[in-house]
Length: 113
Image (cartoon, rainbow, N blue to C red):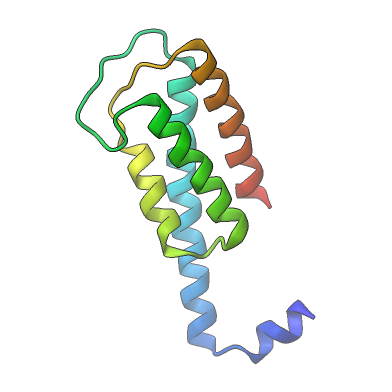
């Protein structure tokens, strides 16, 4: 059924969706690297970035994973992933680090789904 559906789509629409998927995958990979980095960092200084707290990084990361599962070609995925990747530094509690580690695993699963 998916093959027939794809054949019925306009070539430019398919190319556009493929471009979005490629850009989203690259952005999510960068966001996952940041989440992994934050989950293992011992000391951190808070810098001006969006998001600015570990809790905000966790929330946005979970929102990102949810968005990927709903529509991996959505343009908001790249924006959310870039926001996460742009975090300079935040301080995370041991519980938050564990949550970030689990979220990084969810990002891996979303990237390969």
